[in-house]
Image 1 (cartoon, rainbow, N blue to C red):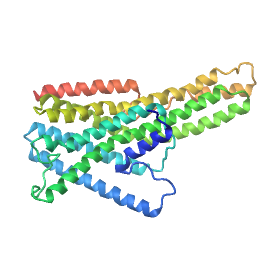
Image 2 (image 1 turned 90 degrees about the vertical axis):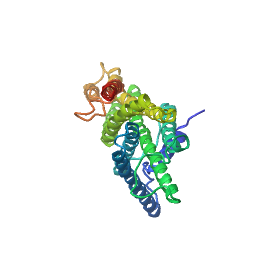
Image 3 (image 1 turned 30 degrees about the vertical axis):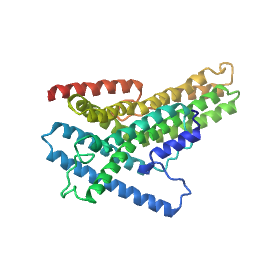
Image 4 (image 1 turned 60 degrees about the vertical axis):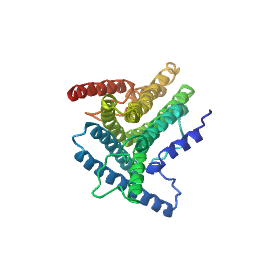
Length: 348
């Protein structure tokens, strides 16, 4: 199966359509923007209502460990979705027009996994003794018709939305891949520089790309922070359900959730690692130029480009994320499993 940039971009847009996370085109009509705003507000309110009812259900079933763990995982997914909805809403002026081909398979796999996890929860009542997908407790009878159907639809819709919130990480990864690709294209231009004019043009373009990458990092870092925190909790709690639940259906539901949670941060760590490498590669490309026997101006420009490339572009939040990379991802997994082991011992 051949993936083109256009198809991959269209797929990514469609995967987050339920949350209106992708910025609308600049020529979108006011009428359409109004309906998008109404849908966004209604779906966000629906999710928050569901979250409150789930918290009420956790209180009512506080003595049931399995129900508490299931409800906690679903509530955390809704919280993650809500945070990312608001973050994308505030940053929807950024529009990405190109897609890095190498991430297509990974994005496809993860998007399928996210939606499969939500579908498993939605279809749970078919195979389990529970009547609704979650254990949210309502202040009225939910067994009568059509109240039951309405409640079922609300819970199912919110669960699918929560999984759609996870696919926003594909959108974040897309931005990081594109920033890395711009540095990589500039690296080729620098390597092909033949005179002072070409070198100056590369320096100007390098400054523009650095500014763009800095804006991207500011846009995505708090979304990634929410992914780090919430993914850790999901790994721990869904892992406990795999150990202590007696239901094969529940185990399967949260096994899928556990797998996609483990891979979710990798989705952003990989392009963040690439961004670090590509942003520092500009200096290496400049150093490899035949500039020793050139004019003093070229010497200064090459040294300036090398010096400016020594500090890589990193996705970091002081005190929380030192620098998002594959190395950080491995330490994240190690810490998550340490928390899981500690909590497992405490539960036993």
